[in-house]
Image 1: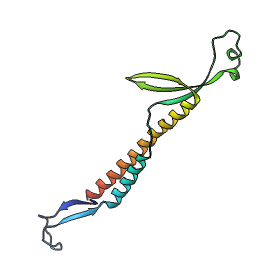
Image 2 (image 1 turned 120 degrees about the vertical axis):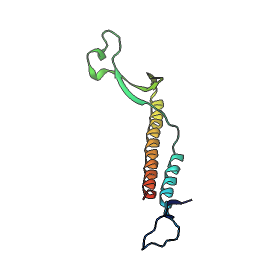
Image 3 (image 1 turned 60 degrees about the horizontal axis):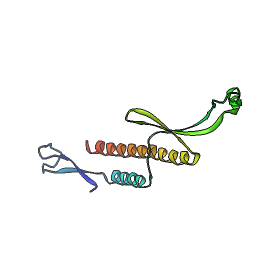
Image 4 (image 1 turned 90 degrees about the vertical axis):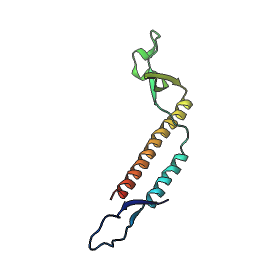
Length: 132
């Protein structure tokens, strides 16, 4: 499984190369090992989620509340999960624990894409190896 046929030399003849038909094989075992290691990393990823979590401090609408004049007296923190749904921005207010959990899932998605990128890079290196 780790060997890839690269070039058939059947019609290629020179004085210093054996004139028998042959095929050159390039060993891609190391690339496959690396690829499988990345696949193993994917197995460790839990839920994945799109979006971002923001932590906000806000002014209320109560007349005379300190938050209207003192930036240090803003209410909060309030947590929001923002994402796109069918091309529209949707925000949902969350409790602190919910926000922490969703942040982990959002990071899982970022990690997922980093691993996929490494897998593709490894594959491209194998392609370059077999394309003498």
